[in-house]
Image (cartoon, rainbow, N blue to C red; front, side):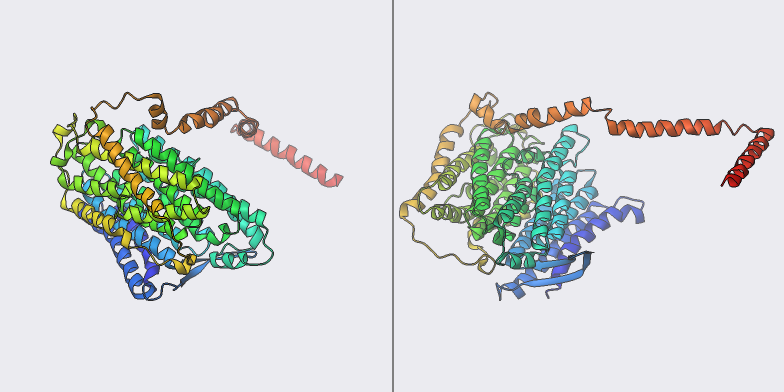
Length: 612
């Protein structure tokens, strides 16, 4: 039964290889039905295998650990690594999210991408993306994890720039690839440092070595901060968050997959997986917490100012991942993973609902051109409303239970009012405002210029995933995983009623503010105050990096166009051409010249022998 887990990453890989190699065996492009069966079926079977193992093995024994040894991968000096998988409840939770939510996104994509000419290429990329993410979370060593980590980065580049004929889409893909490479470089250095200190990169062995008596806490702190650098890159946290809003250039189901089930959760998983290492460094833990707190606020305020429906959701993702980092930083490991699960449900629901809106409005994405759509696309309205309620953490929604866990943990962190708890509470208010702002502007209020052309674009293959995700988003609060065996249990503490009351009140106040400001707002939206323009630009980070890093680098590259290295290469090539021309001139076709050259050469050779 446990052997089924080895097939979980293999099935999407087989789907990818089959779709890529199809033209080699058939002159004709496969039908969309065939591509859908391969692309969606491979993920569906992987999700089924995961569910079978979860029920038959892990549900009976939450402390179960499954090790799957496939083959020896590396043996260099004292570095011995296998292509092996390590599955505990943390891994299993990630597998269920990736394959389960990923399957629903694949199924929705069949309807969403039905008119796209590159249907086969799309599903091939999507399968490879899921395969890379599965390898990342199943790896039993950090090098194999890093292989999946880089695979996810490559696939995000391919999918964000899927419609590459549009220059802006290619630029967005390059931006995502380059910005995340900064974090990946830091992470790679962290892996070297860990191997230098502990002589292993196998995760269970590394965890055991951490418990040793002679631990250099300074090295551990630096390694944790370097791993955090990789995490903030993949999870789009400060200061490497700028790539994610531009990643909306890809198809909307891709946005759902990146934001809900795969790439942006990788950083959260990495820190949670390496939590024994972080527990040794108070500096690293505090840094993680403050990165999350700052990010959730900055991204939340930016979401309030956006006019593109997908960019609102993009900034909300950055903000909600910030909540997860806040939870990790205050030691609420289970809370972070619980919010990861509920966020996967309602964020996938929101993005797919937004995709239905965009298709129904003939690819219009400006929320100020919408309004009054609840009459024309009622199912999408219901699904989007459920998603917004969960995102805002209204009472009894899945988002409420997971976010409440984080806020209480932040309160406990300093046993009272503290800056991290205040950041989380303010973030809850801001989340309520931007969640219902987009709901009111898109579905309620006055009709916009695009609303009159609305035609419900949902097909049955799109409706089914929306309904399932809506159900999961509503009941997700009941699905808290038993992670005590992974993270240990924390004692329950009594809290004053007013603490819970504040957490409940904030999203409700945000809803009221959004109703007052946006329910009947005129459809202009382009005239922004200075502060709104600042938030709209993402707090000026793109402008800062453009002037601080990009333009100086381009200027230096222009000045250094003919640098010394290039001169050496060009000089070698020039010398080779000149020698070639010189030697070629001796090949003139005159036999007398060849004989004379041969005679002179022979005499010189004999003279050299005599001299020696």
